[in-house]
Length: 251
Image 1 (tube, rainbow, N blue to C red):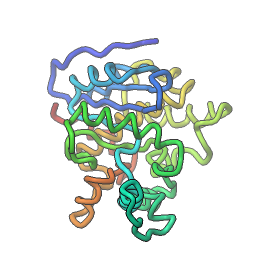
Image 2: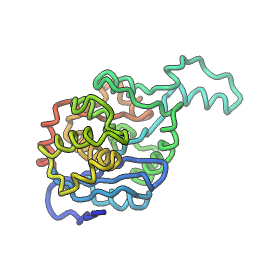
Image 3: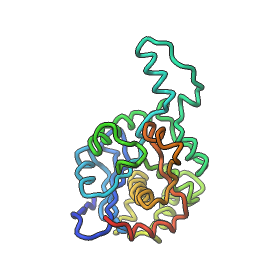
């Protein structure tokens, strides 16, 4: 598997994308140096992610970085032996950002409190602390952003069916071809077509670059405090052509 990640020697911003899984085996990582893909690997433990992040300006992780406020309040009260506050099932299952992503992309993220993605989130928050320290802003303010490749693919309308199935090679090839028109994929094209995890890692790196450039849906002033607690999913706010801005980001 190809893997080259030289240290920074120019002014382009290096972007780390992480398609996080509960275990290193299925965790893919990608590094974009501006618009050029310089590293793509289909397995990474926490130490490898931290090492890659040390050479990158921002990090995009495909995993929840927080839980719904209502869910935290109910579980905390129950744990203390207190009467839990009233909350609807939807308030317990979904964060505010999940609703915003569904509104902009038509695709609803998994529930961090009731779906298996919660196991991945437990790994993600440990990584977040190692990357930014305890209590950091979970909406991207500390340089670590929650990214959602599926939401980006939906927002850009790149394919009309899932690209994550065993038989989804044509869909992945279509997405890779679209990215290849705006990024230098460094010869990793076939690897991305073969693995949706690897493809998602590259998408995460691209999305976090857009986030750093202000080209994703970000929380407004009234949403910032909640987003800092619950996390905030970044998906592109404009067309795929916006990827051109990655070439002009300062490192």
